[in-house]
Image (cartoon, rainbow, N blue to C red; front, side, top):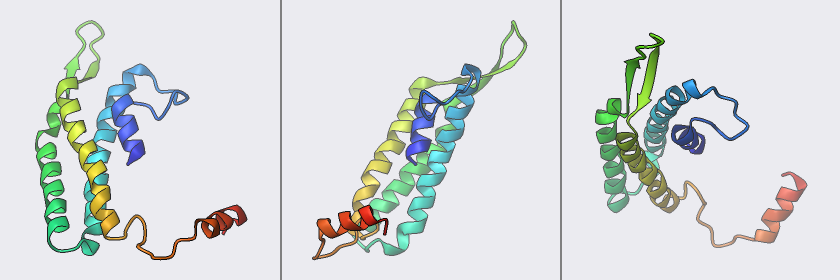
Length: 141
């Protein structure tokens, strides 16, 4: 989702990503839509492990907020015909895009907490030997 977020925001993965400027709006919208899809997919894949109660309600709230963004997502960009070149052009409604995008970013950031409490990010353990973890990384295991 980090890549979805980056390309939706900037239209490129990085400075080395050689994308013509006229394709930037199309990429931003595409990755915005992928960001929505990936958030929904992550929630769907993790719901089984989320504890009943507070975290379950929190996840349901995230899903509802994503649905609300989806309902208005078609307003993030509009297609226009350039009267001079007669070519189709996609223009981002930056204000609306940023509002929707901020909601999705907030959900992504907040989602880490219930996922972590369900041991889906870091496994709960009494014994975590960081030296042993580092040895394993250095040895490639």
